[in-house]
Image (cartoon, rainbow, N blue to C red; front, side, top):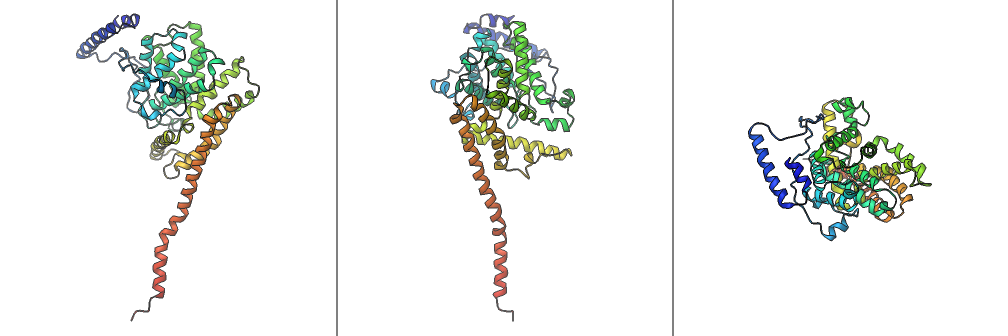
Amino acid sequence: MLEKRVELEGLKVVEIEKCKNDLKKLRDEMTSRGGGRVNCPCKYNFSDDGKKVTPRRDVPNYPKYTLSQETVEALKKPTFDVWHWEHNEMLSCLEYMYHDLGLVKEFNMNPITLKRWLLAIQENYRNNPFHNFRHCFCVSQMMYGMIHLCNLQEKLTLTDMGILMTAAVCHDLDHPGYNNTYQINARTELAVRYNDISPLENHHCAVAFQILSLPECNIFANVDPEAFKQIRQAIITLILATDMARHGEILDSFKQKVDNFDFTNEEHVTCLKMVLIKCCDISNEVRPTEVAEPWVDCLLEEYFMQSDREKSEGLPVAPFMDRDKVTKPTAQIGFIKFVLIPMFETVMKLFPQIEEIMVQPLRDSRDHYEELKQIDDAMTEVEPILFYRPIRQALFKQTLSPPMQ
């Protein structure tokens, strides 16, 4: 009842604070009786430590940040430095994006429900080196930036904007840090549940809608049921599109449409949205080097954790994940040249304005890593010389020295 009252009187700060205190007292009392925290009895229980997905049910308590005009403008650009922000600040930025795009008004969202939903999202990203809440924020911020850069508000509906942003926010929920190949080879619970078909992406969707099924976290609660069914299907389609095993199939489909693209054609628009979330998901190299390069270290750390586990379990190990075989330049060059640049250049045909801000940084990044590889190769050639030179010099001196008496 108190929670409902907070929702009904969401703008009355004094009332909210009073209800917060009352709720805290109630929770403390429940805990003292052995009731514990009130959680969703979520059926999803995939994790090594048995921790269940537990969306928050309390009144959101992260502080409200007033974003400066400088931050507001920076949020719209790929140059935004995602490393300078704490979780609470990232939550406030995401909240701002939903308000700024008009999504709160379009879907008649309760502002407190939006806060609570964002908190639940943050809580259900794990502390992996790469696939964590900061990555979620990166992808969502890049999507927000692409919406502005490509003037998508003029070409797509507000419902499409909501689908793009919500899919970006939810796209890696409860990622365990081990990819689909591991899930399938290790025959994990997820691989069995989803019949080896995009097990992680299916899991991300399931967790997303498990959270949205909670009345206190349902940002689409005031949407017509039939419209919600379409929104749900569209979000699932986008999250499933982030499985890199489907990269070639999705990009080829978009290439066939891009030269005669029709924004009134539902199939064309769906394909564009799939490519947009794919771009945002793997867009770190679009960012400045000082922002992008730490992400490579994070990804390699996650890869090495997986390959070490695969070795210990006798499973196949991908060369690009093996700490004994991969280097930062070799990991990035092929990915930038054969995945990132072709995809972004295809999008550039539809939105030429991204060339300078997104495609050129990718080309610069490719050149940067190719230079690093040349240095690495040169060092590899020099190392044996440096190692053997003292031995050769010693042998040479020995041949010149006079015979022993």
